[in-house]
Amino acid sequence: MSEPVIYLDYLYEALRTLSTLPSEMSNLINSLPYFISIFKLSFWLNP
Image 1 (cartoon, rainbow, N blue to C red):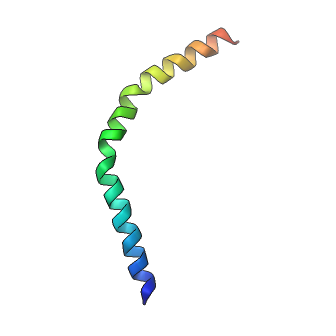
Image 2 (image 1 turned 30 degrees about the vertical axis):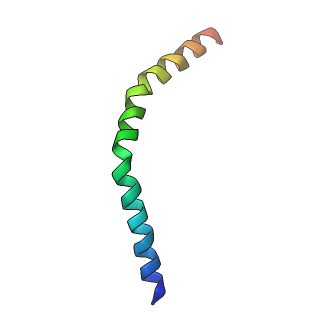
Image 3 (image 1 turned 180 degrees about the vertical axis):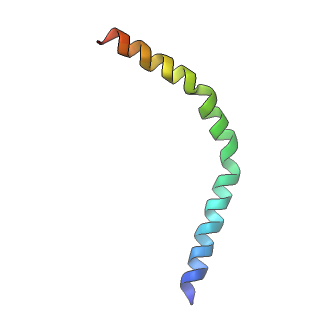
C-alpha cells in the first residue's frame, strides 16, 4: 500500500512546482519575441 503514497508525494511536488511556475512562464513568454527575432536574424544572415 506504499505505492499510492509515493504517487501522492509526486503529485504534491508537481503541484508545488506548478504554483511557482506562472512568473517564470510569463518571463519566458515575454522574452519569446526576442528569441524569435534573433532566430530570424541569424536565419537571414546564413541562408
